[in-house]
Image (cartoon, rainbow, N blue to C red; front, side, top):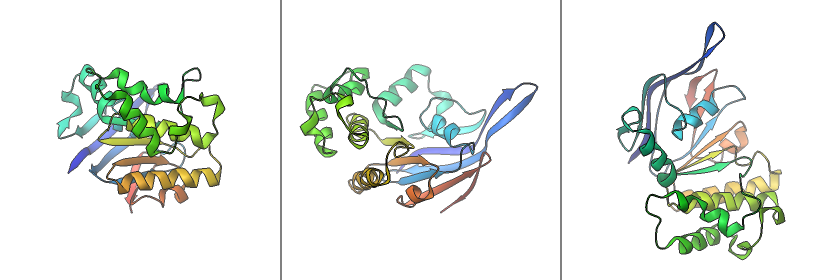
Length: 224
């Protein structure tokens, strides 16, 4: 079942007297259960794609569709609700609040629900257990290793039970051994049915996914 679709999407930014073509004629589909890597070097257009995938930006041309609804037809308030309730974000820098406990950080996305679920605490406990961090629920981020902080960030992305998880360079701040364990966790989550899009510059990371979308100079060069 289709979740996200790009249909000849272009994104241009004015720069001085000219225009930068950050993304040109991008077309692809993300289906339920996919595990996809968006792969490319710095400046290739990966970040632009990520922003469009997460509804943090709008295309200059073409169509972005979520659950068969065209992004341009969705209001700003509705987009924010989709981001809050249907998309889980995982970032390279973890983005955990230092004064808040592991439990509090993982629970944070549920505060943005229009109707917070009555089982919020149970969802957090389940998400932390799934990533192996339930025993650290009362710790602060500063008391954790980089890999543990990323596991908490993944738990935070899971508590909403989102349709799709967007992971932006999730192993970029980790050593190779820790990165491997985080990729194993993503693989397990995908086996359980989660849909994951992983943005990376590292071909070895991309090889762990089922499908790779190669981006170069703002264009999709190929899919493998």
